[in-house]
Image (cartoon, rainbow, N blue to C red; front, side, top):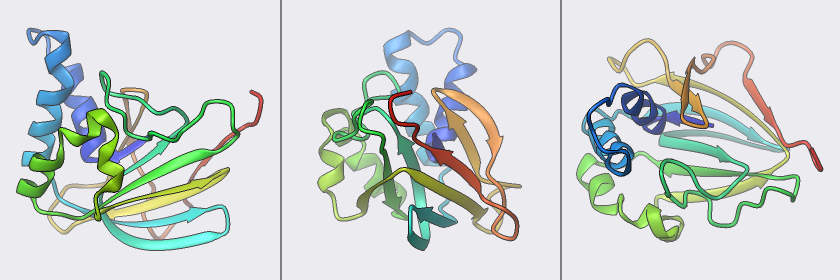
Length: 163
């Protein structure tokens, strides 16, 4: 599942009819960064609670997404855990400069990236002022709508071992 700029990029890919496949996600990601605004996230990873401003949150069961991006290099399909990749709010220029590092998985070494692991993830968000009605969410390249707001119940993502 992806939240914020990555979910926006996935939605943009769905509208690209005349762009060659290998270029779709990179171009959509750069376009999403151009309109990027961070959001306030309330996140619970198992027993650890976080309240943070982030540009992107990815909950991954596998290491790759978006046409070869190695977003969660240590994720394993069969370990019963989800990797949560948090990208702290950063400037657009910094995001654009660091974007290529996601293909090799080296983005996780950057100071603005944190990776957590857990079985149960709860997440809710509030967009930045003027950034729209909600925080976009998507899964497996498909737009799913918006995350629940901070005032209500959170969305829940769980790993099911051996499923």
